[in-house]
Length: 400
Image (cartoon, rainbow, N blue to C red):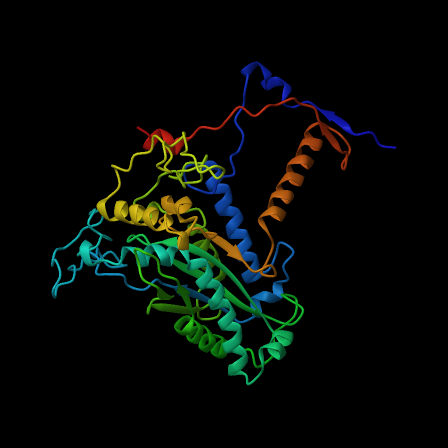
């Protein structure tokens, strides 16, 4: 019987009193953990495009598309330079007519704040996840219709898998970048049927993006509406004469570590954790003593936000006070968006958990080798650590 080796590698740190651990936060607030998360995201997305990490290499021959879904217009915005960096006049006809340079705080703000649909933009952010779910359902339905099949018959022959990330635009609204792939009936290891072509997949995506909609009920301060994707739809082929696998995976992984920074907002959650933003306790209806009945977390100021972003935050907070949008105050710091910034279908590729497990195994093997123990020797880590807290970087920057 092989006895496990004893490892007390943390003993030499005891004289320090405490040591830092990885926070595993994907946001760029922690550069080290953010970089590691971005690399993991790259491998997750790349594996679904070219194989590897327990994903068959056959996926590189499957029909694949890179799709960008945008938000609709909620009002005229100040425009900056073009995508290539070339200067352009901001709404030359009937607009401000100025030449906004890079870094101009006016870029992405409403030209007419009084006529801008702030509630509509907040509700779109809040329901972007539900609208994406409707889109994926409609893609499968339109793909089956294009082949002259029912959904049930098509589902047995082909699988449509997705991987997407959400990106905040400068105006404070999300749009989605997605990878769409067709697999056979047995998943990524099987080829899709001959009728499941790129042309039919493109047609299905266009039809789904145009027709998908979510009905949102009205409230005392806003009317009911139907939320849809914007008119700008970008569909590009992956592989062949289209975009390369590495370019797509790198592009998508870049946004997996971003949040609302592009919109000029980087604040912690505003709601009081004691009363969850209600201002009153759940039992008895008494005023919350932690926030004095305001529902807001004490000590957070919004003076550094631009007027446009501040209005979005305030609008999200007001809508969250309506029973129809209960819980929206929890996401006022993200302008209403509460979906996953990065998500994928279960059969797309590997998982973040699998990548972390592989990394732990590699580190354990390295420790066994450095200790001069036989390969495969199990290690027992002996240590006594207690959690003391974590630095609140956002509170240091935004608290009074």
